[in-house]
Length: 266
Image 1 (cartoon, rainbow, N blue to C red):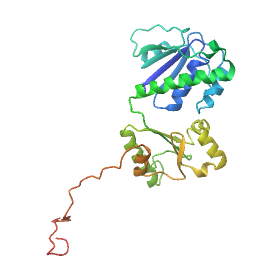
Image 2: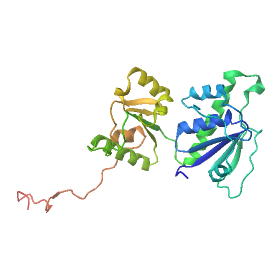
Image 3: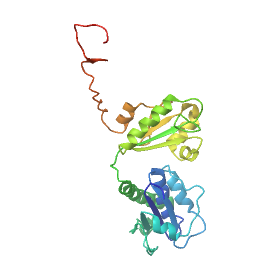
């Protein structure tokens, strides 16, 4: 099991609503995500795939799946979308089963992509609330850092230490330790994150990788071509200035309290 909370989204065919919910949750991050169907269809709904791409999520490469009973037992939450699907609990089940009776615009005569966008938006709002519940963190800015292709992002994997990366990694760890919603994407090992985030995809088309790193706060660009320092990261996260540590060095020289009648050290 991952250290992250986990969720399984279920509908009948696993081609539309459960795939939308899973795609949105994956795009938000911080949760291990699965989706399945009680009677899986053959393909993912094309309109559903197009609708989630409009908000920066993706179903690329996915296909409907049957419910895995072991997976059902071990996730933290099972969400059934719609009244048509039914999931029975299994022995030793870790999480609870909840049902979302989602909006169905077709009952109001709304069809096509207009319908699918309304379905998507209803599900996305529910997913965001669920994520906050599962992750257990306060609502705050979402910071995402998109970096150039690196063998690693710590700055210490090669023969030469990258001081800027070492410091930035430590600063991010500081913020994550305070519960900040923060993601880091490396072009070498996570290219889909670049392609599936419209702001970043457009930036790459115009500027290219030479403009990286790119820092977004709630999908707004706040820095390009540089890594923010800790003070700036704290401001972007809505935190106050870091309080200086009291090292107890006031009015002291290297040998003890300052004696203004003497000069030198010791």
